[in-house]
Image 1: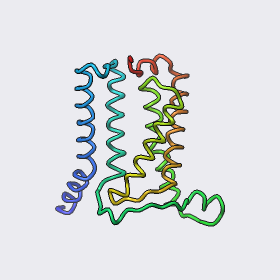
Image 2: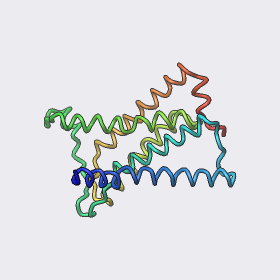
Image 3: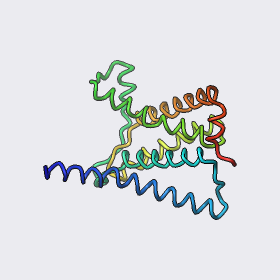
Image 4: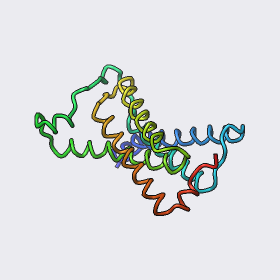
Length: 184
């Protein structure tokens, strides 16, 4: 029983606590910027959406950077598993496909939420998705993680699919989508 409690406490400290701290920090900075007049407060639906977005961003950062490891463990990998699979020079088991799918799914909310919450064009949402995955991957070696070219491609694909889902949402529920937008 004590091993379970220790494992649960470690998981809480490694994953949940940083997500909550990151979300709280994001929210406090947002409230400060709104109070100073730098940002405009949205309606209730928009503010809830922004809170969900903050939770999502904090979770992605926690997943991609924690736990921190010595910098010597990280590195850069320009060998593409995707290219190897397409050319037949690499065969993969179910774990590889699971990780590839997870990289797509991880960025679906970014494309979806960014498109619904802020007034921007599709290319701006795609640029945000690309910039976010590039930042994550380029900084991961500093946290003892590995840069992976496939992650960039798959994360971007996920963001693009999230954008497409948001476009469908806007067509099906235009009034709800408009209520989620920021006022500015």
